[in-house]
Structure formats: structure tokens, C-alpha cells
Amino acid sequence: MRFSHLYDLAVALSPRAARIAAMLLVHENDMPDDLRRSLSIALAASAKGNAAAELKWTPDNDPDAAAAARFVAACTAANRAARSGS
Image (cartoon, rainbow, N blue to C red; front, side):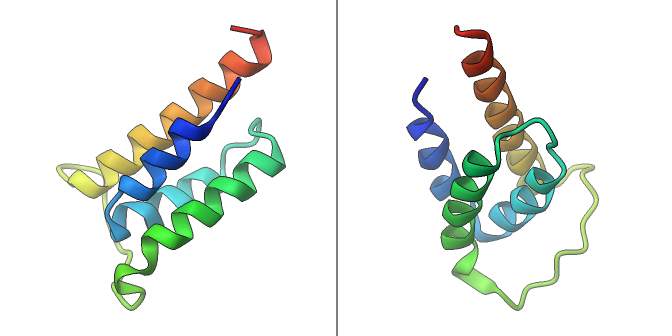
């Protein structure tokens, strides 16, 4: 399975959402290390917008947190599909 759509999603995130997604992605234990590393690089490139911005957030009513959560969900779904052969 190809994961290029995940890279497109990563670079489309806002800088703040990319930083949140990178933090969430670290805790996805069943994602292969090479995929996690590659996506982290793409997210780091997206996060360069404002590196000094604070990252204190709560997921309630936060569009960046919601976008980050959707990105991580897409990553885990793609990983599960690849492992199951779909």
C-alpha cells in the first residue's frame, strides 16, 4: 500500500496542527518506525510556520487539534489496511 496521501495530508496541516499531530503520532505504538519517522519529517516541515507558538491546547472546540486527530486517525487506518492486505 502506498502512503503518499498521508504526506499530502501532513503538509496541508496548519503549523500548529502539524505540531499537535507530531505529538499524537509519537504515541501510536503499532505504527512502523520508518513510517512514523517519515511522517514526522513531513510534519516538521509543516510546523515551521511559528516554532515559538505555545502548544498548550485542549481538543475541545479546537480546529487544529481536530485536524491533527483526523490526520493521526488516517495514518493508523492506512497502517491497519496495509497490514491486513486491503
